[in-house]
Structures are given as C-alpha cells and as structure tokens.
Length: 384
Image (tube, rainbow, N blue to C red):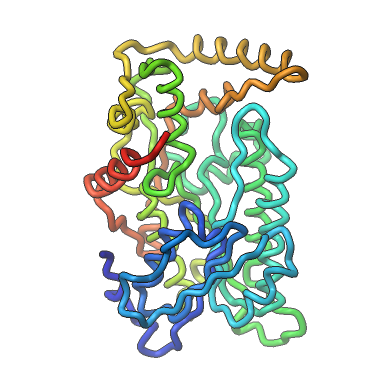
C-alpha cells in the first residue's frame, strides 16, 4: 500500500478535490485511480472511458472516504465530455490509441490522440477546470540513432531539426507531438468571459518511457506471442549490449499523482505548469530481450544464446514487409510490428529524468524488485 498522506499540506487548508481520469479503464488509468484513492486531497474520482468499467473494480483498499464514479464517454465527442467535466478540479488525460504493426488505423489514432486531446482542452475551458495533466510519451525524440541520456529539452530540440522528423511509430509519435502543442498552448489561458486571471487553466505533460506491469496488453505479450509462434524459441535480435529503459506502471501512476498535487498547490501551479516531464524509475537498463527473458520463461519460451545483428534483422524484416504488402490485396499477413518498430526495440534508449524529481517531488514508490515480482505474477497468469 502506498502512503499518500505524508505531503498533505493542501488538504488542511483547501477543499478536497474532484479528479477526472480519461482512459480510466485502461492500462495506466486503473493503476492511477487506485493511487488517487489513497490521497486525502481527493474526495471524488471520475473514471471516464469508452470501454466499460472492469468487473469488480472498486476502491476496496481505502477507508471509504473517496467516492468513485464511472462515465462512459468518447473523447472524440466533446458533447459527451462536458457533463462529466463540470465541477472538476483536475483532469488527467491518459486516454490514447496506439496503433502499431503493418496496417495501423492512422485516422482513428489521430481522432483519439489529436482531436480527442483538443476536445478535452475545450471541455476544461468550457467547464472552468483549472488543471490538466496530459500523458504523452518519450518516443517523440526517437530516430534511428541511439538515445543516450536525453532530457526534455533534447527531445524538444528534435522538432523541426530534421533529426526526428521521420516518425518511426506509424504516426503515433506525431499524434502525441501535435497533441502536446495544443496542451502547452492552452497553459495559463483564461476561461471565456472571465476577466479574472488569478486561476487560469494550468497544463503540464508527463512523458513516460516504455511502460510494463499489470494491465500491459502490448509490450511483453507481443514478445511472448512471437516466441510461441516460433515453437517456443526466440533469438536475441540486435546487440545484447543495448541499454533500454523501461518503467513500471505503478511508478508512472505515482508521477501523475505528484503532478496533480503540485497543480493543486496554489503556490506551485504556475511555476511548474507549461512544461513536459520525463518519467523513469530504477528498473535496470537492459536489452529488451534480456528484460523479457523471465516473462518468456514463464510461458515456456526460451531465449536463445545467439544474437542476430541488427542490420540483418532490419533487412530481413524489410523484405518481409515488401512481401506482405505485395500480397495484401489478396490476404493480409498479420505482422505484429514493422521494421522500424523492431529497430527501435533493439536500439539503446535511455533518458535523464531528473527534472520531475526536483520540480514535482517525484520518487519511485515501487522498487525494481517489487515491480518485477508484481509484473511476473501478472504476465505468468496471462492466457496467451
């Protein structure tokens, strides 16, 4: 159990807050709601999602002082958002669509990630919600070169520089980049018809690195399925010395809680808003294939000792994509990922996330050992 009451300066002098989480039924959203329920600053949590609330999901680990409401709504329709946003103190916008593989639905992804974010901003303005936290991604700065110790400023510097203009993730990174612009443009904006700017809309952005843990349906499961298709054997693709950073979902959720607390503090909100914050934890750097080895083993998949050079992997997958596209008018070959996604998964990528620790008082609350144990139990129980 996370103790969320140690830094409750606000709750003694401010009314308890109503917090709305878009994507409340999702991977990150469910974990975040559980943690918000332990915050004495929070009186009401509104989980908003296009999907139904998971069966049995409740706040059974709290003292009953926090109310949970669920709203079924689509972020691509602003009219569905406005009723839920009324009387809300902070919106945490985690809802997103990630379309990977050879046949992504880019139109739907842009509708959710770009239009949906603009609708959230507009609903905040219309309902005078003073605080908005947007969940983005560290992948904005990715290109074919390794990422070694990038800060938020390094990621931002790739925009318009030619270094990161080729979106290697089927438009996902571009959709998040454009959504970020809208969120930052909305920071410190006054509400319509309001001449008092003492409490404007304050926004900030959370950029987690690749997330793992309970609720993950994409990252680790993709590796496990691939291993099962290859008769329980998986070669190590790329260099085993690649250093790739991952973060546990519980620590990402906690970063959002820290951001919320800072925005709810009148003395801090305008100092820390209008900025992006990378989120990492103490999960050891490793190649993706070494990282997933225990989870593969739990499903009877063995990681082979042989390593296939990345250039050969890229060329082979490029040829496979050409073949798949050539026969796609007749039959669609369900490639789980593209050559670019595979390349990124095999390339060194780690960040310097010191800013969120110093500015938002974030520190990981789950140790690497605890994160691994929780994740192993979850992935081992998955039916794949």
